[in-house]
Amino acid sequence: MELLKQRILKDGIVKPGGILKVDSFLNHCIDVGLYNEIGKEFRRLFDQNDITKILTIEASGIGIACVTAQYFNVPVVFAKKSISKNLDGDLLVTQVKSFTKGTVYDVIVSKRFLNSSDNVLIIDDFLANGMALQGLIDLCNKSGAQVAGAGIVIEKAFQNGGKIIRDMGIRVESLARIASMDANKVVFED
Image (cartoon, rainbow, N blue to C red; front, side, top):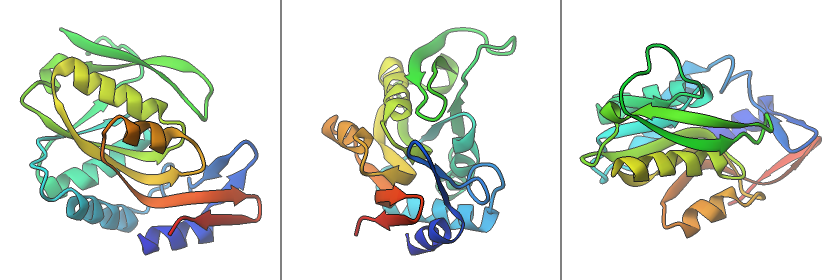
């Protein structure tokens, strides 16, 4: 997606440790117009998949998932990273290790919102080592839901997450695939 790539080149900041900071337009301060174009593109890519739910993980994926869901006319379910008093009943739980935070945490979805009748499109902002995506796939598997695929805004193709998920037989569509990056340059795959 050329619009996204140009925005990454213009406003993205590469930080030490393989971190691409896109908080000025994607995951802290949100460019809603860009989100709208992202949602349209995910609809185009997964148009023939009869999606019934969109699944993401809190927090950065929620906005993207919500805008995308408007194009599919389906609800968004987001996996919570902590238990709360209003999360009750039977729960689906899996563990995820965060690349950026370096911590392991439980992610939780109520069984009421994800079940065997669902055909799920997973949406997330980044794919690096694939741990969050594997956790969301595990939640779908535990619920009996089918995974139609994963829509990723930015994939760090130089890390192994995309390969791991694709080797699982999951369709992954990434709008910007980064081949390499350093403090001076971001290079996209063609």
